[in-house]
Image (cartoon, rainbow, N blue to C red):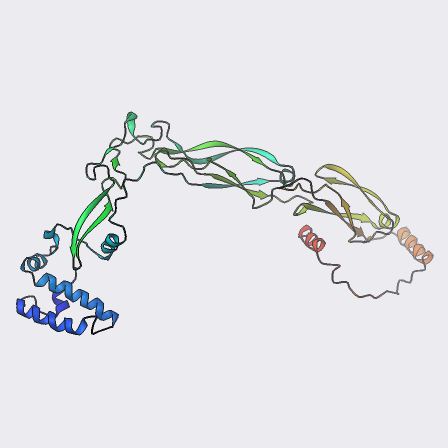
Length: 372
């Protein structure tokens, strides 16, 4: 509570004339018409309130006894700026009781799928712990089939009104009823299972169809599969977020898949056919004689399904020529003979400019990911 005597600068036993004299002096100094300082305007308001209290014998007596000097005018204590704002900007209007039945919260879970499931789609059944409607009270929150009773304080309105007086006059404010928390009704005999909330925690089974082409971060919305709201309110939605696990040898880039294959030096020179394992089963990859490391073979429509629209991406096979690390004596002699037949000088090299694009793009990203 503000010290009104200190605001006027008078003693607690000051006479009415001393109080009036002090107020007039301060009012001439602080009035907004003669003093534009915002701090002075605030102090003028405090001085005016102090004079209103101390100049009235009944208000002064109530103030000196520690009571609310305005309570005799029908108002309660704790009147403040917020009450004034309520009165001017609609706070005093009737809003009515709020419903006990409210919308439930949305929920989010994450599900791991492997590359094959992400490519072709899959159906999953899983359990979640969530809020479901209480079966014992059917979501009402009341025991033995009873219903909430009308609040004795607000008479079902969910709010109470107060008339208060301040230095700007009499103001009526409206607040939620503290007895029923604004519901307008009271659960006098709450359900023993849900403690009056109308819902309980339990595990329930959820079925979800994951479409072909999903990837990490995609979310599937299951309407009405989230938490049931208080008071038997409608359930929110459940969002299933996809987390794609890493494949042992296939690397995904959008709708395309990448695979690295190491072939012997002799096969690279002679050409040939190798068999690789794809998501669709064994596939044959052929390459021409003289294939170089880094060259690619594209297998159409063996990649990932498009999430929206038909068709699939490609499976891109990256060929790596494996150079022997250790040679036997016979192998070494054979290679020397081959070099002689090809008229190759082991000390002669061909210098050329490095193509900056040769080591960029998807292959370099794929290779880094594969050998990480």
